[in-house]
Image (cartoon, rainbow, N blue to C red):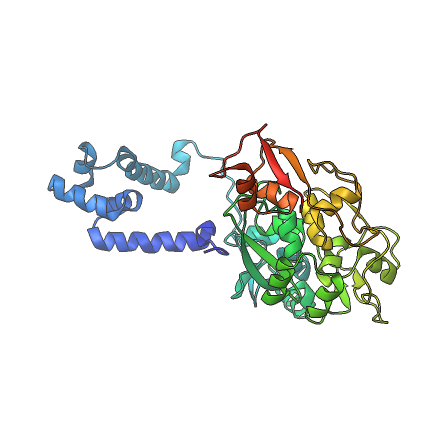
Length: 416
């Protein structure tokens, strides 16, 4: 399934193979035909015996009744068995046998990440992955799992596991289908997680290689936002941070930093600003450590009373776009372009500091038309997101019947 693939586990796979071969032997009454069926399928072998009028494997192999691969598969198994019984006869004298796989097992309730599990056992993530090759993802499955541990670590693991803070447990996992115009950064912002966490959860080597229709797992640590809260956040991107905070579920006052966390990601998760986090925790920079405790709400309760009237800045990180930054701060992409004198192309650089709050607070621009030149990799969805319009509007404005556009093509767009 999505979480576990027992075919990757040598012990589980061997047991399954032995069981299947036994069933095939019962079916055909001959080990050679059982091996041929294991390779080519029992239905094909049965049809071959009926066509040849014989249940002798060598008769089938001499004809054209089976695929050549199956004809050769059975002799190879027999040869391997003979060599395995008498390796020295065939020149195999310096064989280094692998150590026997020994381990202890402890049951894990729900989904916990490999980093947390390894920390509880006092071993490395690689040690756990080597003993548990059937686990396909970044964590144990939601229904629980019998985790294999190095011998001598079980007692320590059980005690440490019981004391794992709630915010370090994967409390909920959801799925997201990538839509046109979305980036990993915008998706991370929507679900109050980080790009690095999404990358780990979905085994992504390149954060820019997601595609429309792709299904992503969304890991959410601790208190996950409710479905209604997520819908509200995605449908009302222009609402103030104070209104978003008031409709969110009650937040804990302390956050324990997990691997992949950033100040910006934590601030987004709890509906506060990076400046507030720095102030509450006496931080001079943005460096935080795994396991560090951070205060994520003020004791006075007056931090979110008014919208910011002074300019706030955001430092662009790898994978971010103007659209994702605008979504994070509840402003429009066109506002960011205007406040930072960014041209129509919307190009930003990693490390660039952006003003993310205008001095006036309201956009008084009358909707203006401009021309956009399509670049390689552009899509109508991405362009629509950039200019705060819809794909249907782009098609209507430019007389397009489909979604195909070409690099160099000029499109008429209207600023939101």
